[in-house]
Structures are given as C-alpha cells and as structure tokens.
Length: 435
Ligand SMILES: *[C@@H]1O[C@H](CO)[C@@H](O)[C@H](O)[C@H]1NC(C)=O
Ligand SMILES: *[C@@H]1O[C@H](CO)[C@@H](O)[C@H](O)[C@H]1NC(C)=O
Ligand SMILES: *[C@@H]1O[C@H](CO)[C@@H](O)[C@H](O)[C@H]1NC(C)=O
Image (cartoon, rainbow, N blue to C red):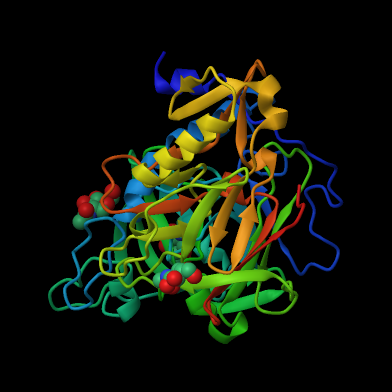
C-alpha cells in the first residue's frame, strides 16, 4: 500500500462541541474568525465529511515539502537580491481568516500563515484564479507600488527595466506544483474593526497549478513585510490565535491582534530570533516526556543555533509535529516501551497500536523553557477510519532537510491559545476550547 493510499484509511477522532457562534462573528466583533479551510464555516467548497477527513490527512502528507521549505528560508542579503527566483512557498492552507480589503471593504478569506511574511490575494482579471477575487477598480484607496521601492526588494521583485519606472512585480512558487505572478500593491486592510492603511500585498495576475489558496494568504511571520511589521503601533507586535480542531463542524476559532484582550496570566517561554531564518518563530524546546518518563535526548539535538538555523519552531501551516530524526527515534522508542504492541506502520506513522489500548496510552508533554505543554489525547493520536488502530501523531523531519529542526505543528496546537508577543520576545500557551 502506498503512503497516500494508506493515509486514506485514517480519520482524526476528535470530539467536537457546539460552538457559541456558528460561522458568525462574535458579538463584540473584536476577534477575527479562524476556520479550517475545509470546515463547515469555510466559504470554500467543503468536501463531504468522509472525504473531508481524507483531505486533512492528505494535507499532512504535504508536510515534508513544507518542512523543506521552512528550512530553506535563509536570510537574504539585502545588497544582493536574487532576481525573481521565486521563493519555494510550500505552505499548506489549513486555516483561513476573514478580512476586508479596499474601500469599501471587499471580504476575503485568507490563509493564516505564521511562517510567511508577505500577504497576497488573487485580483480581478487574474488567469487561473477561482471566482472570488479582489477588484482594485472598485476600491478608492488602492495604489500600485513602484519597482524601485525597498518593499519591492523585500518581496524579491523583478528589477526595474532599464531607464524606467514600472510596477513592482514578483513571481513565487507555491506548494511544489504551483506558482503565481503578482504585482506589489497597497490598499486598506480591515481586520475586525481595525484598518491598516496602505497595507502592501501581492495582487495576483496569473496562477498556474492548483495549490495556491483560493483567496490568498496573510503572512504573520516576523519579517518586514508581514502584517505585524506593517501594522506597527496598531498591534504593538502582539497577536494570538486559537485553532479549532479539523473535525469541528460548527465553530470558529479566533485570531486576536494587539495586546488588548490577551490572556494576562498565561505561561510563557522565550521567543528566539534566528537571523538565519528571520521569518520564523523559534522557541526553546528543552525536552519531551512520554507519560512520566523524560525521554533521554542529547541536548545538541534540541539546541538553538542561530548560525545554522537549528532549533524548534512553532508553525501554523504544518499539520503534524516533526522532530529531528534522533529526537523522533528517542520519543518513539520510549513510547514503544510503554504501550503494548504489536505496532503497525501506516505511512510515516510507525507506532499504530490497537485503539482499545488508547485509554492507557501515555500523555505526551512538550517541555519548553519556562513552560510545559501537556498534549490532550486528541492532539496526540490519530485513528484509522475503522477505529481499530490509533497512531501517535508525530513524525520525523524528512531526510532532505538540512540541520536539526523541530516543528510544533497545528494538530498539536489545536484548542490552545497561542500568544505571539514579539514585542516582549515571548510565546504563551494556554488550553482554550475553541471548537
Ligand atoms: C480597471 O479600470 C481600468 C481603467 O478604468 C480598465 O482599463 C481596466 O480594464 C479595469 N480592469 C478591470 C479588471 O475591470
Ligand atoms: C513570472 O511569471 C510570469 C507569468 O507566469 C511569466 O510570464 C514570467 O516569465 C515569469 N518571470 C520570471 C522572471 O520568472
Ligand atoms: C534553553 O533553555 C535551557 C534550559 O533553561 C537553557 O539552558 C538554554 O540556555 C536555553 N537556550 C537558549 C538559546 O535560550
């Protein structure tokens, strides 16, 4: 059985509860709704429930490409910018946020991506885009940006034509099999009740391939073109989100921007800045426990190394948490000691066991500097659709990735408030049901 076919037998067994505000905005309008892209509240064509789960699993099968992409995000030297090489953007669109672009605002559902800096949306007249596009002509605040501007360098725009001004255009590859070309433009971005004037984003003219998120992507990374940087004092470098589970049917999670309304007594761990991969949110993972056993892991496999980019990142776009091979093996070996076999391998998951033993399956705890995150069972185990097997939902980083990199992914983050306090260089994690 090949990998994809094997994964088709999976379902995620995650309990869902009734949401207070199905699909709508919360009454105070202070939160932005966050919905899984294929969930019931998503505006996109939702696959039928049985195939919907397979879609989620299919997304996880694309993680290796994203992991490779994340590890390739190396700082650009500003003096020598590659000309339109096209960044390998292999992120996977699991969650979208509702925003408005232009004046009057046009509603767009953009993918939330903490490891990307630039935002982009498909624009009217675009070749290969789906029906919902942004219409620059219908906005009174729209403006184009010139190829000579520093922002154009930041999106690795094409160089200006000899002896002339031109719009800033850039090409980008996406998802391994797709690419797009866009112009860098600016317009008002409305997030709940806030307006970010002159927000710079890519206006897509041409898409080839099928992986580009249909209504664009909102980059929440750390770089100069990201929403945090462009909104400056408005959000003071602070945001948080709660991602609902994939399986939730009626619900909305939320993205909270700015320091107001953030949890006050949340436990935090330092956010580390890695000049080697400046867009990414690094944290100090110091260990992993399986049940009560602290897994023996050589410290160098977890160490943060800004020179080579090694360390642990937290990412909204990877589905299943990935560990550097020796770290993964140590966790797997401890797990196998504690859980009664026999074990089956399905795809990348080597520790599938009889689901009837799940009640005794150990709790997985991620230890960060200053904070431990005890993973709920539904954030730890995947089930086969027949329900007979449960698998520990972690995987090794693929071999083609350079350097020791661990990625805390969205399945493990679900139903937690994750606070990115960039201003104070800290990341907060607290349990919060947002199904
Ligand atoms: C937008 O307006 C310009 C000038 O009025 C026009 O040339 C262009 O075709 C319009 N584009 C679209 C997509 O409607
Ligand atoms: C950018 O993409 C456009 C449209 O797909 C293509 O015509 C153009 O050659 C590309 N430019 C570069 C430098 O790759
Ligand atoms: C990570 O945490 C450990 C344990 O507190 C500490 O010794 C180490 O210096 C930290 N690493 C970084 C890069 O802050």
